[in-house]
Image 1 (cartoon, rainbow, N blue to C red):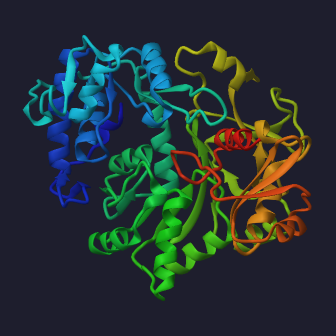
Image 2: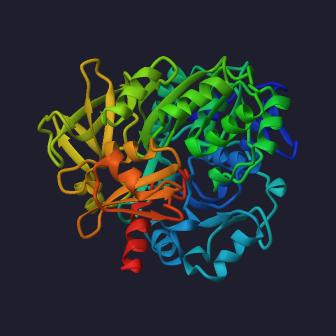
Length: 482
């Protein structure tokens, strides 16, 4: 069983693009079956292709077609740079490219992309609509990789995560039981794995009218009317995407009551943002979802019901509250690199939808996985604690500690100062608090107790969610400044 087999039928919209192009569930089943037959013939089970197709109907036709064939889609983040992308392609090995003309032109610069069998989507490849194929295979080993994606590499070189069909099915079961989407829902999808689960649950998926590679650049003037016009009922997105939407609505004294659920994660969700989301979407369950590339989801928090705790946690320096672990995972707080329990330490997780090993990378496995008690535990790299109600609080990352100080509580206090938009505590010849904003250094010192502070024009953020501090880039910036 894989996600292809869970697709429904009928004339209801399955996918809607900003252009107005619509694919019904009947269209989706027809096109993915056709492509599945083609991929089965050209690639065979386990054959890998690089996917550079822009987010939209064609991308999901291709991905689900690969699922049907037992093929493997490889997604590489172009922001990683030429050398890193080339090294990644050399490690994984692909037999073609699916993407527009500029993606096909990558063959001129990446020898690893030449000599394949599948080139689809644009010149000099074949148009997706021209591909013909027979029926896809009836079955194959569920341990076959369906997708190979990569971590951001913000704390080191990117690691390849192979998601098998069994893994994706387990992830869908967790998401579907937690998000509870169904055929009556219209889901604004910004995260690919959540969109796949939404389709498998029978919901209509809407692609927002924005550049999903830069979620913080969202224009509310385009997305809010789209949400109203299509009757969106659920949304899953980073704080960098949702914040501007809520701010735009509240600025004009407006709300959107059609939303029943708003899921956000990928970075810390402040009490202020949770409050704004609750006000902008008064009928919605506002939920913080905590997870990672290797384990999604890990924990969840009803932010509306927990607003007082979020406020108290920020004011008292307790860290970022991300909620109760989902029933399908086991969470421990341990001394880094061990399974020895401690009150505040590294968060490790295990479960059916938790990645147990990286793609042919024993070095990364040794550094990020712990075997114990008959299970493989994933080291999230995050530090935190469990409170007396079993809820998880994050206080930073193992790699980002400044001496014995966890950065989140300090950064949160800084960001509560009016005019401070983002802050980061780093070790630069000793503790240094870097902040972006219009406030005076003295105010930031008083709020945080940190003697050395530095105001910058912009604190760099991660390329994927545009919401977390990119500490590698920040350290490089500080090194250049001397």
